[in-house]
Length: 357
Image 1 (spheres, rainbow, N blue to C red):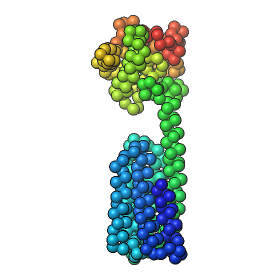
Image 2: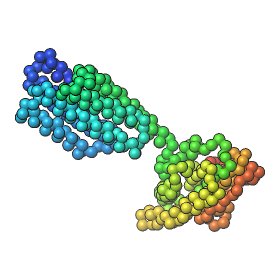
Image 3: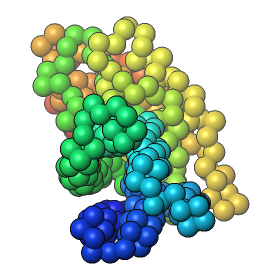
Image 4: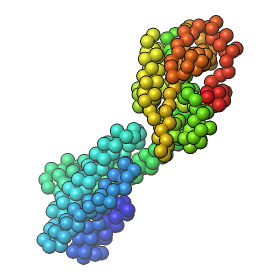
C-alpha cells in the first residue's frame, strides 16, 4: 500500500512537471499521497518486524493529514522549496522510525536480512536529507540525482523485504523441525545433530526420566500425562543455561549433554533439576499431580563413542530407579564398562515409554 501511494504521488508529480495538471492540483495531491505513503510504510515495516498488528499504529497517519490540512490553509505546497523540504522531512522521520523498529526487534528474532533491510532504509533517509540540503543551499548531490538514487533505494527495500520474509519462513520451518510439539523444547533430531562425532574426555551425558509416568497415564489419563510432560520440560528448561544441550529424546525421557564438564558439574546440574521438579505440582482440574524425576549421569573417557556413553548413562538411570527414584546416580565411564553396558541395556532411543513406570 505504501509503495502504491508513493508511486501514484510520483506519477502525479511527473504529470505536473510536464504541465499536464494544474499546479495547485498536482502539488497538493502528490504531497498528500506521498506523506501518507511514508506513514503507511512505517506501519507496514513495524508490523512486518514485530509480527503484531497494533490498531494504534494508524495514528501515524495523523501527521500527514495535518500537513496536508496545513498546506490547504496556508498554500505552502505551491512553493517548491517549502513543499520539498516538508515532504522530505516527513519521509526522514518515518524512514528512521522504520529502521529503528527493525533493529529494536532483533532482540526477539536475529535474521541477517533484517539488518540489510534496515540499512537500505537508512540510506533512503540519508538521501532524503541530501535532497533537503540540495533544495536549501548545499548541493553535495543534485536533488535530481538524489531522487533517482532514492528510487533505486526503494527497489532495494522491496528486494530485502522479500529476502527478509523468505529467511523468516525458513527459520520458522527449521524451528518446527527442531522443536518437540508437545513440550516446546528441542527434539531428538536437534539433540543428535548437536552432539560431537566422538565425545571428548570429560564430556557428560545426563538422561532424565519422569518417575511413575505410566501410572500417571493410567490413573489420570493421557491428557494429564501430556500436562506433566510439558510442565516438567518447561521447568527444566528454565533451570538450564543456553550452552547446555537439552532436548526431549522421546516418551518421558530427556537428555542433556555437557561438553567439557567439570567433575562436579553434571551432578550439580542434575540435582538442580531434580530439586526444581520435585516441588512442581501439575494441576489438572481439582487434582494436583506430584512429579519427580530420576537421572543417570555418564562422564566420557578417551576412546568412548556417543552410543556407549548413552548406554552407561542409561545404566546409571536404572540404578537410580532401583534405589527408590527421585535421585541422581553417576556412573564413571570407561571403554570396557561402556561395552558391557551396551550389551546389557537397550539404547535410550529405542526404549519403550512404558518401561519408566
